[in-house]
Image 1 (cartoon, helix red, strand yellow):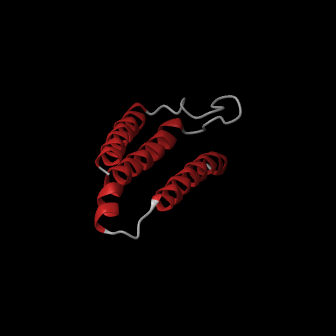
Image 2 (cartoon, helix red, strand yellow):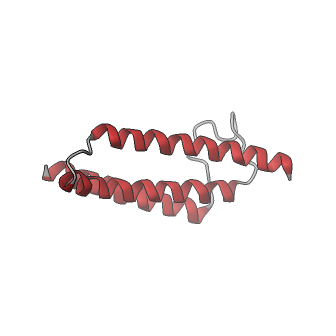
Length: 104
C-alpha cells in the first residue's frame, strides 16, 4: 500500500507543478491538435483555467491515498471518475473559449 501511495503522491506533485507552469506561461501548445483542429481565441485565459484545473487534480491525486486509507469505500473507479470529469471540464473550457470569442 505504501508504494502506490508514494507513486500517486509523486504524480500529484508533477501535476501540480505542470498546472502552475501552464497557468503562469499562458501557453496551450500541449493540447493535441492545437492550431490545427483547435485554435484558441484567448490562449492566456484558457491556459489559466486549464492550469488551475490541473493543479486541483494534482491535489486530488495526492489526497486520494489518504482518503482511501481512512475511508474504505473509496476505490480505484472513484479516481477514474474524477479523471474523466476533469477531462470533460477541459473540453467545456475549450468550448467556452470558442463561444466567448464569438460573442465578444
